Length: 342
Image 1: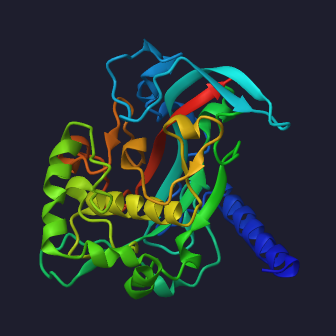
Image 2: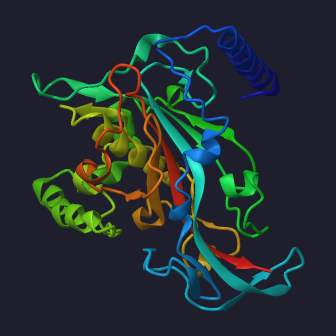
Image 3: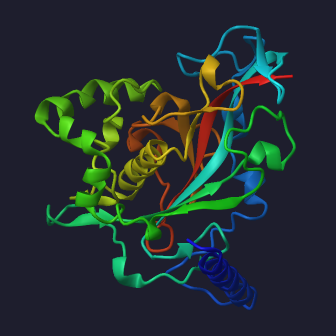
């Protein structure tokens, strides 16, 4: 994309945001694009602050020591990272869960509930839909997603360090939109960009997801089964089409991990667990399931606990949607971060 085209696109997006925000301020309500009011007090009141724990400093839990964390998390007390001149600088190992991304699932193309109900100028050709799969197994679910940087600890200036920000984002930013990704609404294109799907498209691989579902119930997804998302289903193909439909929460959850898996494969998401990731993160082409956990931010927030990849919606999803006005969920994505603090 050349500079002229990029400038035109940026100008169009900015104009759309200003027009939508102005309309909202005058009392206009768009039933097809709900304002989730994320930018405001909800950034404090609707966050599960206890989900930050356990915090480990120098390999020792200083609070919430009974909480779960990845098996590969660093336990050594000291570390070292090279500076710009290649000279090692010693530091202390610091590890914790951090809220760092938002993802919203939308049936209306271009709708951003995170940005106060802004309508971005996208063609409504690929309009999404919800399905419970009760009447027609051929009926399915499709939703678009928008992926946002949400480094809340940095935004609030809480417990952060220069080496502890893999990706470099320091504010709320729109990172990715599925409306501009042709693989999200086309299973065939998604297959050709992720050909390993052919290796796991068989009954044996599907049956292997049963122990992953069981393990996810106790907060420990099996990372070696990279194609499984526990009780949510299988990840492949990495597109937004769901045949049959298993309810809004289940479908939006599996779409969330599909989106993250695709971003990891493209080098747009980072690994932050382990010794090799302590000095700024590393590229992880395979989705590291145990690195992440999730809380719902909208419509009904989870403020006292989080859930892991594949954890049944029967455990965490009761009463989390509102018919007609609250069926396009927004999730806060948490990652475990091992960091060498200087």
